[in-house]
Amino acid sequence: MAFLIRLLVNAAALWAATQVVPGVSYGGGPGPLLAVALLFGVVNAILRPIAKILTFPIIILTLGLFALVINGLMLWLTSSLSSALGLGFHVSGFWAAFWGALVVSIVSMMLSMLIRDPAEPERRRDRLTRV
Image (tube, rainbow, N blue to C red; front, side, top):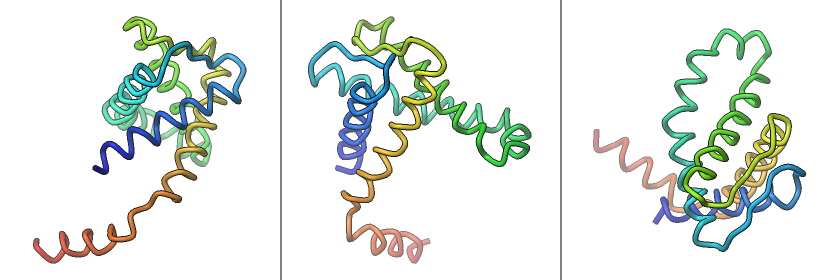
């Protein structure tokens, strides 16, 4: 259930970026948008940690601000992959990707705070006591 909620939150955040940021566009229905959100989640789960490890010194020197650049690059990569798959999601350049990733991060964080499962701390505590 948590996976489905996370997928819907990502889809809503991506949709919000298409509405707010010039250069981030989507032409399709809700089904392909869910596929774009899934692709975005996979890119972030696999490549973003590697990119952050490789750029760790730059992230430290910029006091974490370079992480925003990495987020933008992940959104731009998602755009390239979704275009190749014919999903209709497009980011026109680096700055659109940068601002789009910022919008996606903020909207995703806000929605996650609103939808937070009240039983999650209990489940987390139960998992820790089982170990």
